[in-house]
Length: 101
Image 1 (cartoon, one colour):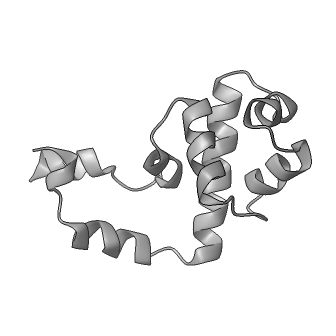
Image 2 (image 1 turned 135 degrees about the horizontal axis):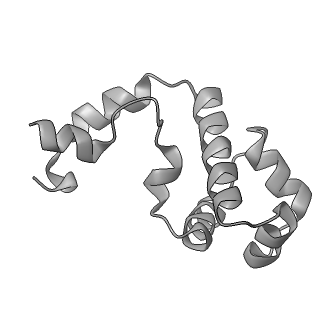
């Protein structure tokens, strides 16, 4: 089963479990983890995104939520699709759910 075939309702239920502040923090943690995995500093990521290093620090700390274009560019630079940045690694991924159906 393709990920696109998963019911939007099941995805929506999972996202509702996180309040906006938790989601922003989760996003920041994922950005930081992927940045470190790639061996990039905050400054190097900021330079590639053409944003400031303090803004990257705020995103990673869950204190700032990037605009849609920046959100997409961050995913591109980190080599993932945007939804990966919102994935809670403590819960099964959508692909895991699809495989169990």
